[in-house]
Amino acid sequence: MFRVLPLDVLALHPSVGSAHIAQVGGGDTFHWGVSSPPIGAILDGGQRQKTTSQLTPQASEPWSMGFCHSASTCSTHWSTRKLAAELGGDISHMTVARIWAKHGLKPHRLEGYLASNDPDFETKAADVIGLYLNPPQHAAVFSVDEKTAIQALDRKNPVLPLTPGRAERHGFEYFRHGTLSLYAAFNTKTGEVLGKTATRHTSSEFVAFLADIVAHQPRGKEIHVIVDNLSAHKTKPVDAFLSEHPNLRMHFTPTYSSWLNQVELWFAKIERDVIARGVFTSVPDLKRKPMRYIRKYNEQAKSVKWKYFDTTRRITPDSIITVH
Image (cartoon, rainbow, N blue to C red):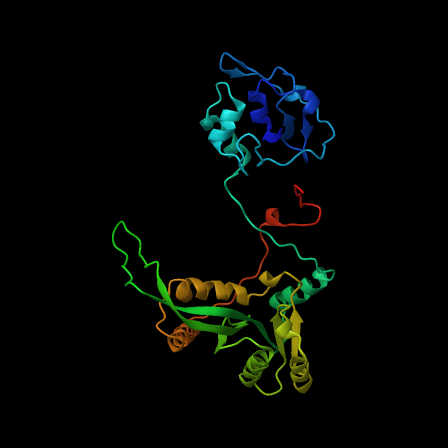
């Protein structure tokens, strides 16, 4: 049975042996086996002895299952109390909590990620980001996508409004009246949105929306449209429309990289403001409220200030470490 622990925790445990310690990626994180002989990392009069010099990194082995696997608790991740109980002795869960805080360890948190497998990722990403940062002169650039299967949900019980000390409450049961899809084209320069609802999200509907984009621009103006890799964006009717409108050019985001499309940020906004907590009595009501929101939003539209500022969150093939 093995664990991955910070050096501070290792120094608190009397049964950690140097023969089973292996450093992981530098820093203060080590693998250890609970059956190892002691290395002098003991509590002496409430003072923790310095053990850094005794921890000699060895070659890491495939038995490491990562920090959050506990065979003794049958859990997928540690809690401060579980780890304190595992370590035993005079170590309290608050001591574990302080050490975790020092090293920025949060086993209770879980985040998802999706790494692109597109061999042309850099080329496509540079193309899209270049349109944001340095668009062609006198051209219109739109981020385009569809938000599909928006449900017209009506609550069976009345909504109880916000009151001091109590959040707004919605009844658990609801009526489902139907669904709609929302097409949106986000103007990356002005922040204005051109929207359209549709009962379906087919290739013909997408072509019709492209026609709306062209109709809202001066004749002959150069138009750049950023889209994801949905199959409906790559059909013969789409190719035929592009052939008939040589002034319109489509740019595809890399595979699994829709986050590069700025319209996704706007979709998150309308989801928070209108859809997530909305009550819709019918499909026409669902159609009316998002379009009303778009008209109001366009009165004070804002563009996105596109920048990449948190390099610590970058995921590369070299930084991905799995437990498989």
